[in-house]
Length: 207
Image 1: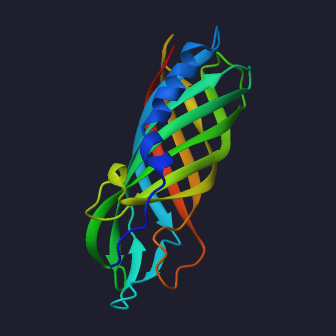
Image 2: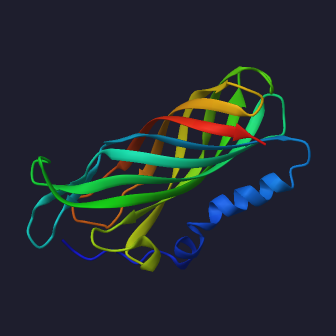
Image 3: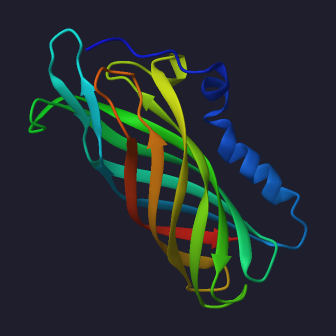
């Protein structure tokens, strides 16, 4: 397999800055409800073919895996909110007919989503719809994303979920999201966009 394209300087220097930025925004959001949460679940990929290795002609695609997400949500309005997040997804390269895993790797993702709630702020159960944008840094197997061994692609995300308040500060959340992202590495025969599906459950705290 060929070597990865060079990830942008912006992504390398800011991929871990996003959660800190969200914390800063939360600290200056006078009086509004702020939530911090962590979620775990699955990452299921559709249209995950990357084309084929130009040197060997072997077909390549990305594998399903697990996903760990950290989110900061600001709720300045009764029915609307802003969410910033970082997620780590485990994936791998599949070769041939997709039955053989050649190497494991990761997808680092940072993004934003606008939230529209069906119930008012303070409600015990809050179904919501979400939509926004993100970037995904696809790390080439054997490399580190922070040292330039990845390729960044931008995309859009949409979906929804439900938040369940279980006390004055504590909550549970369930998310179902889809992330539509350009495909990395530029192998011959690549086409279309990658669809990454998240199904997760998480635990959070309201500040």
